[in-house]
Image (cartoon, rainbow, N blue to C red; front, side):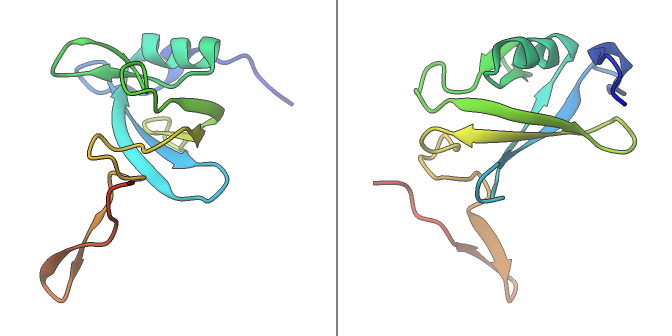
Length: 121
């Protein structure tokens, strides 16, 4: 059984935003975290290109629009509380603005920060 989805039914914060985690659908690697508003969720579902809301620019941000490193939506999932999204994506190129596959390239090991992923050459 499936129900029609309405982005307005999600639980947004007081700024009208919901966190979204992007995960590579093939490898399972967590790529990045960003924010969406209801319109960004709707645009993502309509276009198949993951669209976030930039808090600093107060504007839509289509992943890869300027870098060419697009995220193609495979599936959008909701958590049990409807207050967080998981975007399963096909990532074209690096996901991070530092030219790394993932934004999560630093680990804390034995009390020290350690880079565990080099930029893509």
